[in-house]
Length: 277
View (tube, rainbow, N blue to C red):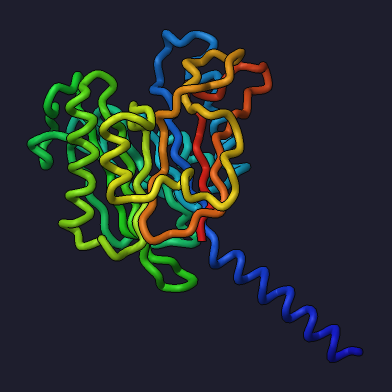
C-alpha cells in the first residue's frame, strides 16, 4: 500500500511538471498610450488594474503596443518577475511608443534581440510606405531555463492609416523570419495589426504562419473582436489584435473582456491570450 501511494504521488508530481514545462502562455496587449485627454480612461486611473490583469493571467510572454517608457517602467516596477526588450519607435532607447516584449525572467533568458522599423529603411527611425507614423517590430530569442529549448517572438504594431504599409509590414516580418533562419523553429508573431481577418496583411501572414485562433483545440472564448474604443457597453466585433505561430500546437485562445472595478474598460483593446504546447 505504501509503495502504491508513493507511486501515485510520483505520477501526480510527474504529470504536474509535464504540464508546467510543456505549456506556454502568450499575450498581446495594446495598452493605449498615456494620454491625459482620455479623461476617465487615462493611464493614471487604470494602470493599477492593467498590472493586476497581467499578474492574474501571468503569461510567460506578453507583447505590448503603444506603451511609452513611463508605462513600461511602471509595469516593470510592479511585476518583478518580468523583464523586457525593445526601444521606442522614434529612435534612441526611450523616445516614442514601444512594441515591448516582456518575459518571465525566472523561466527564460533573453539570448538575442533586435528592433526594426516597418519601412523601407529598417535600421533607422523612419515612416514606411503610406504610413502616418513610425512603426516598429521587436524581436527576441529566448531560452527556457528548464529545458534549454529556444523560441523566437516578434511583437509589432502596424499603422492605422496606411493600407499598403500594413501589407508590406506583414511581408517584412515574414522576410525577417526567413533571413533569421527561423522557418523550422518555434516562432510567435503577435501584435496590433490594425487589420481585420479578411484583409491583405492577415492573409499574407496566414500563408506562412498559423493563426493561433484558427488552430486552437478549443474554440475562441470571449467576444469576436478585440477593439472596444473604451466603450464598455459594447461587445467588440473588430478583430485587429492577433497571435500567429509556427511549429506550435495551440490549446486555447481567448479575448479577455475583463472590466475595471468601476465598470470601464481596462484599455481600448482587449488582451489576447493563447496557451500552447
